[in-house]
Amino acid sequence: MTKPNLLSGMQPSAGSLHLGNYLGALVNWTKMQDDYNAFYCVVDLHAITVPQEPAQLRQNTRITAAQYLAAGINENKSALFVQSHVPAHAQLAWVLMTLTGFGEAGRMTQFKDKSQKAGADAASVGLFTYPVLQAADILLYQPKAVPVGEDQRQHLELTRDLANRFNSRFGETFVIPEAVILKETAKIYDLQNPEAKMSKSGDPKGLVNIMDESSLIAKKIKSAVTDLDGVVRFDRENKPGVSNLLGIHSAISGQSVESLTAHFEGQGYGALKTEVLEVVLGAIEPIRDRANELLADPAELDRLLAKGAAKANEQAEKTLGIVYDRIGFIPARR
Ligand code: ATP
Ligand code: LTN
Image 1 (tube, protein in one colour):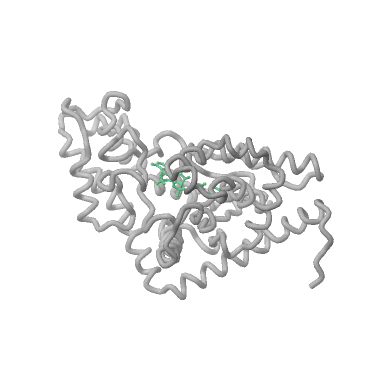
Image 2: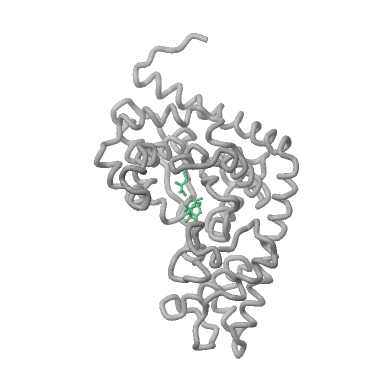
């Protein structure tokens, strides 16, 4: 039996992924690659919707790919590739833009947030059409499943709408993809501001990066915000800091929050932080070290990415060929 397809991606917009990206998305990607024919993409075309320094973008793209591999994405099971290596993404995005309403794109909340931050004149048309490019990323691979965080639900709805619209206008072409949204425990919060999600744009002291030195991670976890109550107990509303630490422990160790609460009974926050640090370092150190090894040999890394791009191009060109034909473009002679 052939496995169903799956696609997901992350932007190379920082020098490291953070604990939220890892526990919220990447861990699930590594698990799903056994049951799906998976395509994992580093979305560099999306990254340039906000200004990027060229040398930095190049480096961040390799760092992001190295972390996918180090976390357990297996290049023999899954296609790991860079978006700009597959021209069909930009080509299908153009077609889908002609099917997207101006008002429809304007309702995307991520665009509204990001353009507000940038200011009306600084926000580019690329930022406006970002979700349409994302729809193209997805639909090219005919995936059944798209594992993403809760924040991506609206973009997945747009993708499904565009796929249905194309299918009803030009005939059955695209598989309608399902969002696979991760469960609540996989949402990680800022260590300094535990009501907000951990984010690269948040407080650097509240952000645990996979590529951080262990001593820096220790400092960040030891100074995580807690409360004055002194009891280790899970209560998101009244004890967000302690609950976040328990959530991180549980997401990595696989122990339930209830059994952890029992385990820490009669102990203070110092003991909790010491153990959270231990499990976090246990998970992150091997990934960081392996990522650094991969980055020491960029030629080998680029070879792996070329292999992924070949697999991705094969599938993407097949879909684009059907789309071009259905639309009424005459075949290009080669
Ligand atoms: P950031 O807020 O750090 O910019 P992002 O959502 O823009 O995060 P991406 O690289 O675009 O980052 O997202 C990669 C994946 O990581 C997405 O599927 C997203 O839902 C997930 N993710 C990001 N932050 C968290 C978090 N704090 N907890 C769980 N999952 C997260
Ligand atoms: N917009 C997504 C990143 C992204 C993506 C995709 C995710 C771009 N293309 C295709 C899944 C499938 C984000 O900000 N997390």
